[in-house]
Image 1 (cartoon, rainbow, N blue to C red):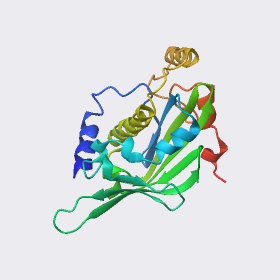
Image 2 (cartoon, rainbow, N blue to C red):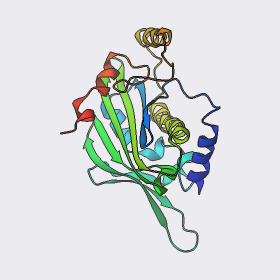
Image 3 (tube, rainbow, N blue to C red):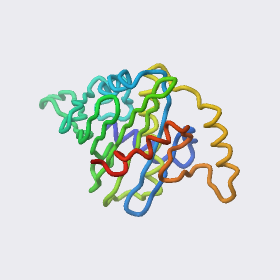
Amino acid sequence: MHSKIHWAAALSLAAVVAQPAGAKVIDQSENGFTVAHTAQVAATPADVWKMLRTPDKWWSKEHSWSGDAANFWLDSQAGGCFCEKLPDTGSGLGSVQHARIVFAKPNQMLRLSGAFGPLQGEALNGTLTVQIKQTPTGSAIRFDYVVGGYMRFKVGDIAPAVDGVIGEQLAGLAKALGGALPPSRDEKAAADADKQKPGTDANEAPADEGPGLDDVAADLAKDDEVVAPR
């Protein structure tokens, strides 16, 4: 399967390939892990939401089952499907459910429940929360993916691979919206300060903050809807 090949490649290369600046496995245990990515774009929340609803324009074909991003679709209502059509190979059309929509608040938040790629074959729950917040220059976008349950992968191996794949999808979304904005001076200063802290790993971040966030994006991570949805 196309998706398995590329996820497997990501898994084997995770230890040797440098992750993007925003890549963070912010928490992990023997039962699961959490990854978070953020980006700033020069697009309105409404434009981000519109693009988010069309994964065929930004979700990587390299992490599909069919090898063609045109086969993705997303019904952005609670109960809706982030799904993919599989080509007819002689026995009829097939399909894949990547995730199910569990929360949809236009221009603000989309939450999906699903284990992506090879995680689908494990006894896992995965929750991807996408948050959008207006900024003076456009919008801040944050992806949080929380995975837990039983799996036959080693968490220490699969977490960095999944982190890279989720980061790749946010990068694709930002690119489709005109490209990610460079980090602000405050973001750079904060990142440099973190690196100077004694005993601090530059690849780690507190669980309530995302990687390289400015004040606006940090607010997303502390949003009550993320911590304790009503």
